[in-house]
Length: 232
Image 1 (cartoon, one colour):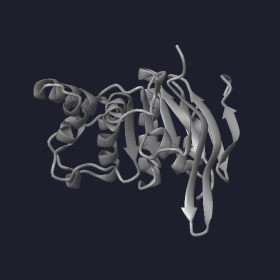
Image 2: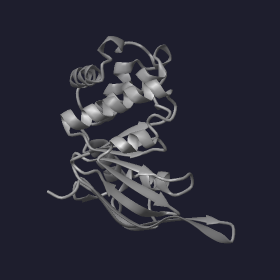
Image 3: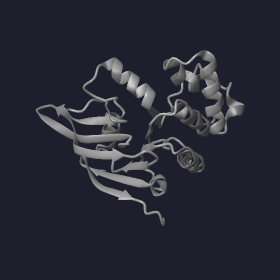
């Protein structure tokens, strides 16, 4: 088996007046199943641009991304949409829950989009909510939940279809320190118990300390790829 995600020679260049901004410069990265990888670096270093490319939200000027040995680019929009729906999960800083839907309705959406029946989707969503400790909040709408609970719903939505990898953009960025710790503990538990693969863009050094691997970016390139030793 190859890596769950592999990027080769990624470049992303944005025009800026008469010049251009090289946001990502020839990045190579490979993520194995079960890894929990943090991407860190100062604002403007290219880490969010890299995450957007790896998630298929943005397209590189050159380079390739493979997800489970299948290309993410150079395919039709429909094929890319299907690949993302089947293989990728997403956790955002702003939760991105639909306010008119209950927690369980938000979580079952990925399954419905993949063609699961209403009964299958509801069963899977309730199981995912249970795995994040929110089975008793299934019928609550986002406005009726705390920030930490909303992010737990978002985590349940990201994992409900058992994706190959979950991509996270500052998952604790809108949470206080105590709630951030709770969300981090949840991600670590899912990684340890379910072997869930995470790629996390974060400014939080505490998250990075708990990841099995940390990529540090500067000026559009990865300047350090640090793996935690088993003794740590």
